[in-house]
Image (cartoon, rainbow, N blue to C red; front, side, top):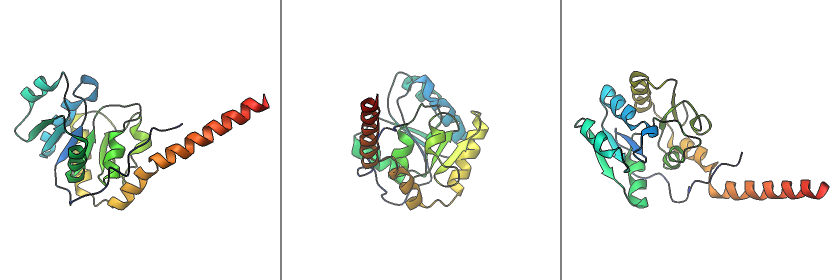
Length: 186
């Protein structure tokens, strides 16, 4: 498996984080933004949502006062949001999901649905929490757990570095060399 690269030179730790949750996502149904909204409300945790999409009007109508929509932001502003978040959420199932690794490159823990790509990018207890089911209460418990845990941002970032561009380039070169060797042997 050759994972896509993360810009770990651009995404890096910043100021001390807050106690709020963050989502960086397209606002489309399969991203399950409504689950994160309900879970944050159940946990009593403010939620900031970065992104836009066709679901935004409905999500804004359903949002409690603790939920803030920022829309599309510049890359610099997205990085700032990652750095300031207490936890970053991934409530939907992704094939891979680059957001958890961008957050981790900023030293921030992730709470993700324990399916799909999150199983390969989130290490329970070290880089965040994997939630076993997609119920509001399970996700709210994951958020509470993550915010109550003292994570080592250097450990979180070190994990993300394994998905950096240098590693990607080395892995791509090795894959091409292996394929060329196999083609030559045939």
